[in-house]
Length: 443
Image (cartoon, rainbow, N blue to C red; front, side, top):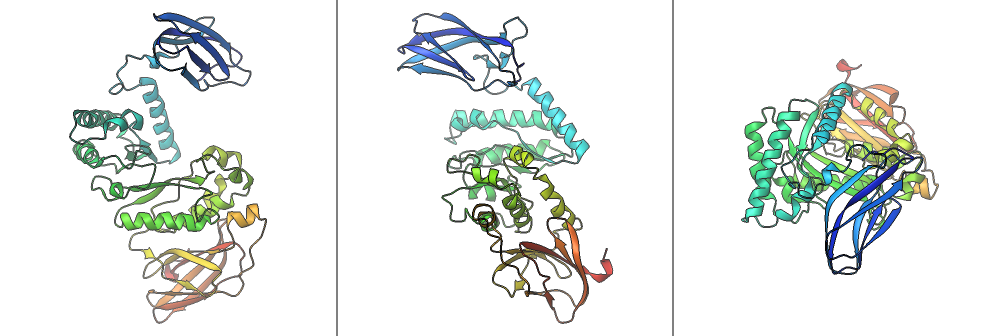
C-alpha cells in the first residue's frame, strides 16, 4: 500500500481478548502494546512515515501470552483526515468471490502495457492461500466449493483479460503444495475453461517442489517447475548443470508439451537472495543460465525471480545477444542435438534438424563459482572439433557467434557430403554459439 513520506497516520480498531496479557501491534518499525480487556476496547495509535518511506511496511498483530483475541473495525487514515486506506481489511468480507476493483484496474493497465511493449504474460490468477486449506479432501463439500469459486473467478478473468493476445497463459496457482490432491480441481476448472475461453489460452500451474502429476495432467498445457540454486545442492557451483538437471526432469515428465522453468535464481540456504548474486556483477550465472535453458530442451529461458537485483546490476542486456542468435529459430521439427566435441573440457548443447543446427559451446570451467568466487578465468579452447550427424548432404553456412555481443564473429561455407559434418571450432575461452543453416538461405 502506498503511503506519503513524512506524514502522520493513525491505525485504529477494536480488540477483545480472552487469555493473553496483551496484543502487540507492529507497523513497520513502530510497535505498541494493547493491554488485555474482557470486553471490546478501542485503540488508536499514531505514527509518522520516514522521509523515504513510500509503502506500508510489515503490519502484524500478535499475542503476548496464550489465548485468543478478536479484531474489528481496523482502520488506517492520515492523522489530518482523509480516505480509509484499509478498506480491504474488512474482517467480515467474503474470503473468496470478491474481486478487488482497484487490483483489477491495475491488472488492466499491466495487460495494456504488455500489449504496447510486445510482452507476453503468464497470468497467475488464483490466490493460493485462499484455496490451499480446502483442497485436502476431494469428496468434501469445501473442495467442491473451492472448485466452484475458482470456476467463477476464471469466468471473470476470461471476460476481463481473455481478449488480449498478451495473455500468454493462465497460471492457476503460484507454488501450490504438491502433496495436495489437486488433479480433480485442475480437471474440473480446466474443462470449464475449455468451454468458455474461446481463444484457448494454455493453462499451467506451479508448486513449491517438483510435481510430476501436474506436468502429466491432461488439463495442464504447460509443464512448469520452480528451482533455486542453493548451497546444499550438488550442482550449486555449476549453473549449467543445474539448468540441465531441471530440463531433464521436465522432459521426463512432460515429453510432448511445452515446459518452462517458471522461477529460477541463485539463493541462500533459506531461499533468500544469495550474497553471491550481488557479487556476480558481470552476471555470469545469469548469462550461462539463459543460454543453457534456451538450448536445453525446454520451451524458453529460465525465468529469474530477482528481477530487481538484475536491474540494479544492469544485467538485462544479456537477453539481447540470445534473442539475436535465435531470431530465425523455429523449434518445429528439431530435436536435441547429437553433436559431439573433441575437447572434454567443453559442453555442447542445442537443437538440430536435417538441415540446420543451433548449438552452444561452453567451457566446463566457465562457472559462476570459478569466475566470481575463486576469481579463476577458464583455460582457452583453441583446437576443438565438432562432429554433427543427421544433416542432409549439401552446402551450409556456419556462423560462429559472440554470446556477449550478440553478433557473428566468423562465417564459413562448408559442404556436408555423407550425412556427417566436421567443423573446426574457433578459439574461445568462456562460451561460443554456432548456427548452421543451408547456404541458399544465408542472411
